Length: 411
Ligand code: SAJ
Image 1 (cartoon, rainbow, N blue to C red):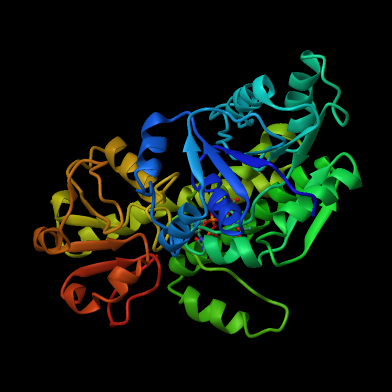
Image 2: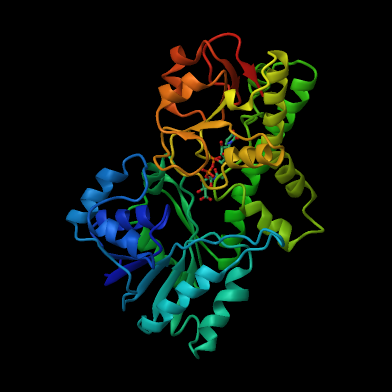
């Protein structure tokens, strides 16, 4: 592996930060850059900005290896951009503004011949359509003055550190030579296979992976609705079906959240509206699940003659178990639906979410339980699994199928 000067990681969020720390742990010289002053100040003081298994230990190792954090872009040869790539809610197309702005800040300072590696998920074609023109506008020649690469991440919140080391990954480059050089860089911490391909294939494969998962979850969710209608046990049916050697149905749930699976398929729908019937339908099914949960709450209230919505408690604000990330969380979608239907005053609790972000959010589990009659489990945190004894006397709507006692309501 050729020696690299500084690696400048741009964007210190859920992906950029752990990646920066892994490089630093491997002994490389790393500077993490973010435009958010508060975030940089916090990291400089030694405080992490989100929780993740093993992140604290990794942070300590990276600090002792000299990782630095700054709001300034560094003059160097290697950049990794891990900034957000939101989608425009109406057109469902990717909004590349953060990548473009980060890229331009990098182009202002980078050395000639620098490699700029985009880790952010982008819709297929984004590099050609939006990124290359920025480089050309400045009179740089891509592949000569600047090397552009796309190296999408694959790590899953909750198991990021392990997966950074053990998941295989993809590097899209314009030439095999540059791709292999960057592969050498990532192999400083990634022990799995690293595939070098072209940029277009790297972009597409990333979005395809998340779309595949979205479609499969939608199938499980549709089954849950079918089974509910005719009083069948969807979990038993999935358990049996999955005994078939070539069947592997996923778990139904209250909806699909997170910044990846619920977003990436929209890039394909936005770009290929006439060709994405299956993908769009899957998105619609998954997006309909919070409404299905609302209907189930109504059923339980009716059955037990409970008229007061403030007796309902929603457990879980995170988008999935054992993380504090609330992006695109099904619970937000449920709360929005409730609000639209004038169901004000529903109570909320999540042990991972330490700041008050919604109305009637409790910070203490006991206080929360004391106030409610119906408990809706939206997220299967380990916390609730180890507190089954305390919720047994409630009417429980268990959307994650985690209750170990009889009598809970299911999706
Ligand atoms: N979910 C279900 N049923 C399931 C599995 C998940 O309802 O059987 C729900 C979860 O509760 C959650 C949502 O789906 O709301 C997404 O969670 P997830 O754990 O499936 O995935 P993410 O969004 O945390 O991470 C995904 C991963 N992609 C794939 O597995 C193909 C991860 O590897 C990617 O790195 C990440 O997206 C990303 O950054 O793109």
